[in-house]
Amino acid sequence: MVRIFVLTICVWCLALPVWSQNQISGVRAAPSGDKTRVVLDVQAAPEYTYFTLDNPNRLVIDLANTSTKSDLSQADISGSLVKKVRYSTPKNPQSARIVVELARKATPTLFPVEPDGAYGHRLVVDLLDSNPPSTSRQASVVLDAGNNSRDRDIIVAIDAGHGGNDPGSIGRAGTYEKHITLSIAKYLEKLVNNEPGMRAVMTRSGDYYVGLNKRPEIARKSKADLLISIHADAFTAPGPRGGSVWVLSMRRADTELGRWLERSERHSELLGGAAEVISDNVSERYLAETILGLSMDHSMSTSYDLSRKVISEMKSVTKMHKGTPQAASLAVLTAPDIPSILVETGFISNPQEEKNLNWSTYRQKLANSIFTAVKSYFRQVPPDGTLWASQKMNNRTHKVRSGESLSLLAQRYNVKISSLKAVNNLRSDTVRIGQVLTIPRT
Image (tube, rainbow, N blue to C red; front, side, top):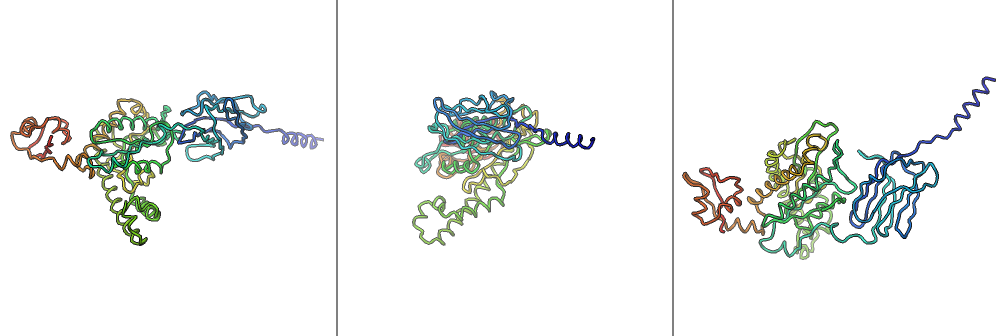
């Protein structure tokens, strides 16, 4: 009798339903080109169905066995397509119905994503916009005519790391790296554009995502003389702090060189009009290999020299985690014909540095230190065909002798003291005996 009773209880236990509801831990939406991506962070792999509604335009997603306790009012939404994400009456008590309110028609594509690194399970919704905004989504591109003329501007491509549905590293106080990098990039953009003979191009000007390989491509299409990628470092522990500057590793450079040589359709980008004249594929490849090799060598050399100047200037603003340029295989630095550096402005995982990075004055100082280094470098080695190259060619030099001062030299050569200081990157009126100064013509 006892055995039967025990057996009955066990069978009843096995028949019990086990409810383990999924949870929505976060919702974010951001535009990228003609699409807007909505991401639902969930604790387990989602089971879902969906449909769309008109008048007003909505996307309705039914999530099986999912709780509705999460607060969707805190969703991180940017762009003009998604107006709101909210709950609606579910199909049954064990499910959740999510409504994505849209400003206009959009074609949805949904797919689940498994955990990867810092991210857990996600349900990704790509909304193809029926009428995407035509402005602010594309980086500014400099006209070819402007780049081919004499005395052109020095073009600096500024890349704000991460963006959109990619927040980057997240500080302990909840600071998103993508917001810090965009703010510093905009300060740097203003400094560059305010300098005669220089012009800035942003790979992104708002909170939207740009692919890693797309960023150097934007710089190439803009015929940039330099690409600067702005980031904020992070670590699993709060201790590490300080900035660093990174360049492309030699191993990655060799790999990229090989890839470009295999893409014969891109040889014309390297050879210009010569590619149309050369009909022998072997000769074209040999010439492309020679030009690309020289271009890559120049870019890497310039990147390293400039990195040292950036580190030197950043020391006056923040502690440096690395005192010399670091090399790594980074996708954003792979343009073979554009000097490229990646600047880590500090550790957002360090509480004090997170606080510093949230201070606008501090971000301005970081941008100013980067700009000062860039300006100093290009004053010494201006790209051919630029206004600065023309000015340097027309300038004179003077070796300072005993008893000479900056004001005396300005009077002697009939130039302004401010012009002397600017062309020689002087921060004070002090000059030393034996110092060689560049004397501008005007």
